[in-house]
Structures are given as C-alpha cells and as structure tokens.
Length: 133
Image (cartoon, rainbow, N blue to C red; front, top):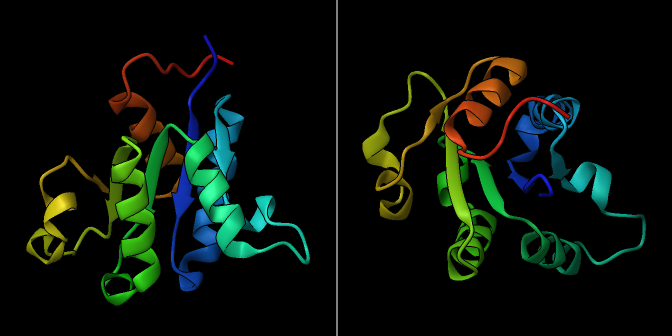
C-alpha cells in the first residue's frame, strides 16, 4: 500500500519551518506536496495548488493569527474538505483554539513544536502510517 501524500499549507512567514517539516515527513518515507518544491517557474500557482490538493490524502495547515484572515486558507481548507481529505491543523502552543474556524475546531489539531517532533506526532496520529520507509 502506498504511503499517503500530505499537502502542507502555510503562510509565507512560516516558509522555513514548513519546508523543514516537509523534509522531516519525507525523511520518514512519506510523500509531501509543498509549493516551495512542487511549483515550477512560470507555472500557475493556483492550478498547481488545486492539482496538489486533488492528489493528496491529508491536508495539513499551519495556523497562526495572521492565517485566520487569509483567503488562501479558506480556499484550500474548503477544497480539502470538499474532496474528503483528512484535515489536520498545526497551531502554536499559546494559540487560543476558540479562534480556529469551526471546521478546524471540530477536529483534533496538533501543537507546533520542532518540525521533526511535529512530523513524528503527525505520524503517531495517522493509523496505517508507520515510520518505516
């Protein structure tokens, strides 16, 4: 059985952490879609995101107060839910969960730690995913 493909959504101020997180997931044998590595020069970003969402199994979004007003978050989140993807939010330790949109508040979310620790925790919450490549 193929490992699930994880789509990573984030704000640009979280770009470095998101890339390290994606690399930590990849090192654990998972397939990851992240725009920094998947969108080629000259390619339509919106089309690439839509394709990445369609081909993914799990939608992971990094949440901070600035992303809660981002139209991109709601577009990607709505598309992921509409496509029946598993949705996982990652929030800062001091984040007030009541600030999450209801669709995220109603799901188990993860607390943002180091990229490696958060990747390990995500693996621990996903049935059928193990850390063996």
